Image (cartoon, rainbow, N blue to C red; front, side, top):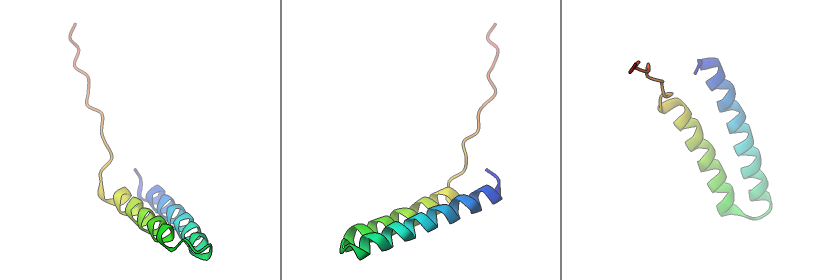
Amino acid sequence: MPTHIKLILSAIVLAVAALVGWWQQGLGETASGYVVWALGLFMIVALWLFPETKRRAQKDNG
C-alpha cells in the first residue's frame, strides 16, 4: 500500500478513535474510552507493521 494512503488512513483512524474515546469519557464510561484509544493505536501500528499480502503466480497444470 502506498505511504500516502497509509498516512491518510492513520489520520482518519486517529481522529475517529480520539473523538469516540473522548465522547465515551464524557459520558462517564472511562474503561470503554481507554479501550477505544488502545484499539485505535493498535490499528495504526498494525497498518504500518504488518506487510500487505502478495499473490503468487499460478502454475499452469495443463
